Length: 81
View 1 (cartoon, rainbow, N blue to C red):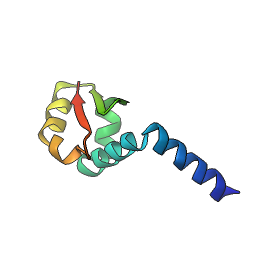
View 2: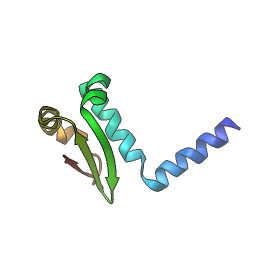
View 3: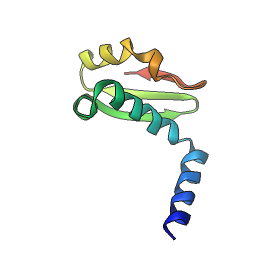
């Protein structure tokens, strides 16, 4: 039962491409730490082939911009606001 639910949820994430948001968030946490992400990132959203990261401070925006190349996946474009 749990495996069935998990496979349905995984399929839903792949179909709606929410897994790109998850991978971007995981890379942010890996690079900067969970505390930095919780404190400085307002929102991570996806539209078409772009992932938008909204930050609370200009310092956080600058930090993420420095490591933007490591965050890009496949043909996904990242915009930091």
